[in-house]
Every structure is written in C-alpha cells, then in structure tokens.
Image 1 (spheres, rainbow, N blue to C red):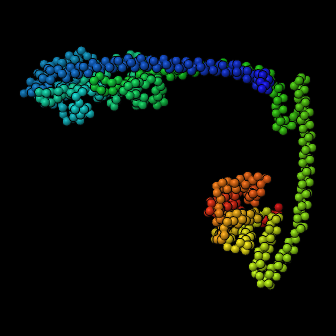
Image 2 (cartoon, rainbow, N blue to C red):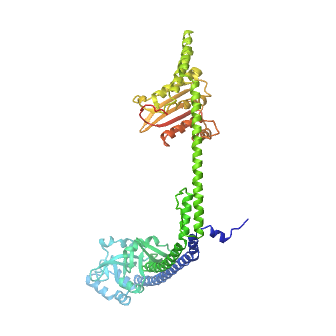
Image 3 (cartoon, rainbow, N blue to C red):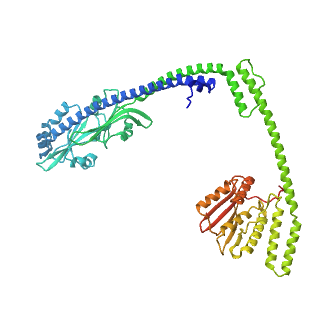
Length: 599
C-alpha cells in the first residue's frame, strides 16, 4: 500500500492554513502544554505545602489539647479521691459557722488554682445542706437539677467533658469547656459533683501561636475554641471523620474555600470525642494569584506570537486566498466572477484558466437546460394526446343511455335486483366522470358515492358486506370539502382484504368527526385484522412505497395526494389487531367547501 509523504499532505492544505498548522504544532501546542503543566504543577505543589502545614498544625493543637485534657482529668481524679475533701463533704455541721470554718481549713482548691493556669473555676455541688454556700461549694438545688449536665453527672461514674455557660468577672457571658466528675461519699451514702472550668484565655494563648485558623469542637456540644470565625463550625461538620482517621484537603464552607485538616481526638479515659480543624484561609487566594500570574504570562507569549503569525500569513497568502474564494464560489454554482486578475505570475494564469472553464460550464448548462425543456414539451404533448384518445373512447351520454336502457328492460322483465345494480353502477360512474377534472368536492357527495359503492358490493356479497355511516347530528357534511375519489380505495381494501375470510356478518363502519382544525374519517372493518409484522409491511408500502412494487399502491396514492395537497401534518393512519379488525383514519383539514376547482 502506498504511503503518503508528509510533503504531499501539506500540499493539500491552503498556504495560510499551512502556516497556521506549523504555528499550532511547533509553538502553540508546546507552549500551552508546558505552560499548563507548570501552572498545574505549581498549584499542586502549593496545595500540598498548605496541606502539610495544616496537618502539622493539627498535630500541634491535638498534642496541646490532649495534654490539657489529660492534665485536668488527673487533677479531677485527685480531687475526687482527696480524703480531706471527702471528709469535708461528708461531715455534718451543727452551725453555719462550724461549716464555714471547715471550708476555710481546706485549701486544696486554692492550691490547684494557684498552680494551674488552665483552670478558670472550680465548683463543687453537694447535697449536704449543713455546708454553707461559698466560692467553691454550692448546694444542689432544684434549679441545679435542671442544668443539662446534672443528669449525666449524677448518674455517670466516669468524668466527662461538656460546654457550659460561663460568666467572667466583668459580666461577659460565653461558653467554656468544663469537666464534670462525680465525688463518691460512701460514709453518708451520697455524692457531690466536681466541675472544673477550663480557662478560655489559657487555651487561646497555647493554641494561637501560628498563622493557621483553628476550630475545636466537642462532638454534640458545640465549639470549644475558634480563633476567628465561629460561624463556620456548621460547615465543617460534613468533613468530620470518624474516631479513626482524618480529613486532609479542600474544605468548602458556603462560598469560601480553604485548605485544612480535620482530625478527631478521643479524650483520655472519658470517651468524649473532640474534633480539631486547622484551616488556612489564605491558601486558595494565594494559589489563585499565582495561577493568574502564570496564565497572564502564558497568554502574553501566545498573543505576541499569534499576532506575528497572523500578520505574516495574511500578507503572504492574500492573493492565494482571493483565488481560493473565487474557485470556492464557482464550485457552489456562483459563476459571477471577475474577468481579470491583477498580476502576471502563475496565480494569474490559474485564474485565467478558471475563467475559461467557468464560461465553458455556463455554455454547457444552457444547452442542457434547453434540451430538458424540449424533452418536457414532448412529454406534455404525448400525455395530452393519450388523454384525448382515452376521453374519445368514452362517451358519457352513450354509457348513461345504454345503462338506462338495460335498467328499464330489467324492470320490464321483473328483475328489480339487476335494475337496482344498473342504477347504482350508473350513479357511481357519473360521480367518477364528473370529478375527473375537479380538485375538490363536498364531503356529502363523496360519502354518497361511497354508499353507492358499498351498495353495489352488498349486491355482490350479500351478508358478507354490511355497512353504516355515522355522522354527528350537528355536522353538515355538505359544508366540508374533500379531494374527490379519496375514500373508495380504502373501502375497497377493507372489503377485499379485511373481510376476505369473513363468510357472513362482515361490517364496515365509516365515522366522521371533527376536532379543532382537523377532520377525521374513520373506516373500520371487523375482518381478520393484521399481525404486527403485516402492519409494518403495510406501513412501508404506504409511507415509503417502492416504485417497482404494486402492493398497497392505492393506499400509497391516497397518502401522497393528502400530503401534497395539505402538508406533512395530514395523512393516513392504520391500526389493526389480529382477529379484531382494522381501522384506517384519514386526517384532513376541516375546510369549508368553496366550489370544485378545475385541475
């Protein structure tokens, strides 16, 4: 097999397109490919860098939070097992003064607060009514029992974390992380509840040392800490992983995108689950800035080279493009071209040859057109002669007089059935001959002709062919126009094929109806019907009738007459079911009759 050389391939393309192709292959594609790769790679490296930053910061915050919760858990355990505190809470004091002195003698709370800056407040809630209210001791009242933490704290053996309302010394209210622990008092068969409130300032000072934005929330209890936008907490929840694993990548909160790492932290011993989110809000803006800068440089290079190639190729191929457009117009049949072409080079010679060829084509087309006209005139003359010969062979009056003579003799002989048949035949022939030169007739006359045709068929087949015509009472069929001799082939098809296997009781129903602008004529026979395969064959013969086939030619002619006269939205529909019958529906426009036009 002969291989095409690259040089031959280029010669098949216009000169200007060759230059564009070279520019596209040698400059545009490499620059776009390399530039896109560099932009993508730079963006990917930046994102990876920010992800590593988020992950490292998340580990740092997780370590701090783990250290804080573990330390406070240990201190809470020390307090709940402090024998002096248990003795203080279990004692019964005769007077409030005695209880106050007992409280003053216990300095465990003050020592803990002075040595641990992470604790904002220590509260012990007791059922011992002999102990007076103080800075650290509070009675369990009905209001206390309504607090959301009390039910779990009074029933839980294990300390747990929760977010609780807290008010500072200036009266500012906020939520603070609180550790609730139960203190067992076995001597009096009772208990007390220890609450350690974490200092928000301590958490902020420990965590807020980097450029990352940090959000910590306790699962099901709200935000523990947020370095800025607390309202983004809800948008982070879908990214929160399970107890194991972490999420690292793009985080979208509303319309804001950021790079972040979200990881869980299971608090020591308590089983509470914290989530830590380390977010970088500046990652995507910086990546977008770098991407825009690189793309701008890339587009500048491409614009400069494209402008140069465009100017050069336009100058170089101007005359060739003019010649190409002239030849293209000639190929489309537009032979109105200039007689001369500037220049004396090879391109001018090609244009001169083109002009000679165009003039030769115009001359030959004129000769061919004249030959077609002469041929068509001969065909028209031949058709007129054949038509005259045909009409000269039939003298309508002679036929009518002959049929009337036969009818009268039949009546005289007492054969009324023959007389009726001759009468119907004459009536039928009169309608056919009268409408050979008209374009339209009334629906009333067409139905009357069909009734005559069916009456003749009933004389032939007796009970095999019965018929009925159903017209709505309010419809005046004399006001509607229809193409003449349109329904007879359908009725004939129903008798010859539909009722072919019917011995008796055959029935043909013609139903006229109007819906909006459409006139529907249903022709139904209760004959043998058709299978799906037979229907498909009939559809092909009606809608796409082969020229060499004679099957369903009458139905195909009806379909073609309707579409040629009225348009594509009108025509003929067929529905059939085996052993149930066949329904033909003729769809026509509901037009008023304005008198038949001569063809």
